[in-house]
Length: 332
Ligand code: SAH
Image 1 (cartoon, protein in one colour):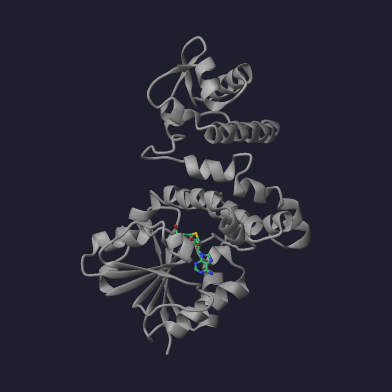
Image 2 (cartoon, rainbow, N blue to C red):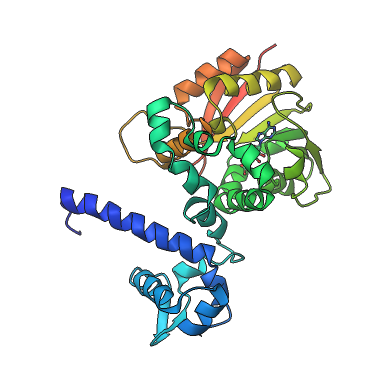
């Protein structure tokens, strides 16, 4: 058993974690791991390809190497390690897009966290205060950043998607509408597992065009604050946490208006524990606060929201991932 860090070491460690985050974000922004995908490169070649200052780049990679991210195979020649492989844009377990969004100098989420103090003082999303527009508007105006955000959502969900598919008998629903379904990764995985189901992928028009085609999936562009398609089950993964209670209630009331009595509401989100333990959802909650003015919710907060929007709260199904499925049923 390692000895517990002293309180001071715990705090100072946070400073180093922050610096490591900045360096990893810069490495992702420069796509260094992709440059090393075909084998080691010396620092001069790497600096040329990334248009950086060679000795500064060397110093950053030396520091990262000390944490197991990149390694020198000979003096000044760097190669990937299993950890830096995750920084490759097209690697199977890639975290590139999420790092790009959260830690790179121009990453949207990084930008939003700079507004933490604004959120704390004014109770408004720091991102909006700093940028003068919502995150969604920002992505519409900056399609490249929007595309990386969608990629990040897909990668971040890579382990969650099969966990959600396998934790519920989705086959009981003839038509599943995935509201704010992004590029469709969760819906497609469910459809592939249940050949008798059909799906409607509903998201903003510019987002669904990035989704792959699927024979049993109809892409539908729209706004979940105004028009929602008919379906037997409504899947909303990582949607309600983007919105405050009034907006989340408005979305759910809209779903209720479109739903047949008895239709299922399948909310896939973190459920925040009432206890003091570490839970990633408590940190994602801060992310939602600074980025969108949204929030993660406790079981009880979901129960209240469901009730107000006309849904019976049925159960919470845990999955072998950080997200749970909060199940509701439309009342008459
Ligand atoms: N459900 C997906 C994406 C979550 S990100 C997943 O789990 O990976 C939130 C999604 O909500 C984005 O794809 C965004 O385009 C969509 N969205 C935001 N506002 C919307 C609106 N008014 N109508 C429809 N979709 C919206």
